[in-house]
Image (cartoon, rainbow, N blue to C red; front, top):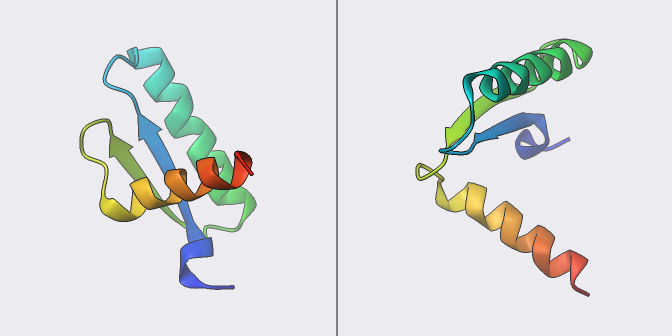
Length: 66
């Protein structure tokens, strides 16, 4: 598996309530534990998205629209 496959991204919207942020972090942690902490977990706040992060979602949208 490539390094990219070993990452879990959690995106937090700017209007997310504290409870939603908490449950998002909890879910990321559960997935991390399920994979025996092999993946790296990365939290990205809305407005701070990286080029690579945006590329993944664009590629997914393009795939779904085919």
